[in-house]
Amino acid sequence: MTESAKPRAIGLNHIALEVGDIDEALAFYGRLFEFKLRGKNDKMAFIDLGDQFIALQKGRKQPADDGRHFGLVVDDKEAAGRALQAAGVVLLDGPFLDFRDPWGNRVEVVEYENIQFTKAPNILHGMGLDHLSKNNSAKQQLADKGMGGIDPFRRSER
Image 1 (tube, rainbow, N blue to C red):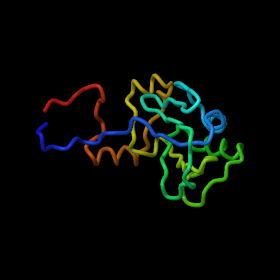
Image 2: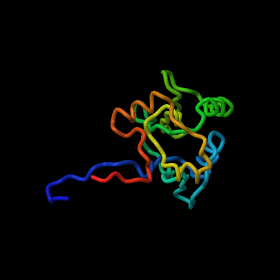
Image 3: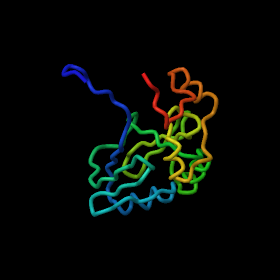
Image 4: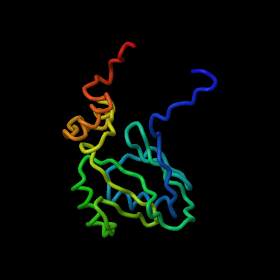
């Protein structure tokens, strides 16, 4: 890399959400989603998402998010909708499965098979999600970018 070259952004390591109380946030998200807790203290908790994580941080001060949101990828969007309904979470108007948590963080739930985002096979295996795949639209979107049908463990020789 030359001195003047800019680094390329290649992904997200984690998302940090500010919440009012760590234990309450873990209880809320635990009613909605199955997850593994990586670690916790009085001011932070870390929810594993395979090779990524969500950091819950105590101290939300700003008003509720409107357009600003993050897309949380799930294995089963219908099951997520049922869990949201069972927990009494109000869905936001619009074409997507969006909600706000009790602290105003806006979350859009998206299903793995429908989007370009892809976990490597070893990560899916480690998460017990070997059965997940992409639908044709997501496969085509990846192929259009030259990313379809590539073995993730074989580096192309250039």
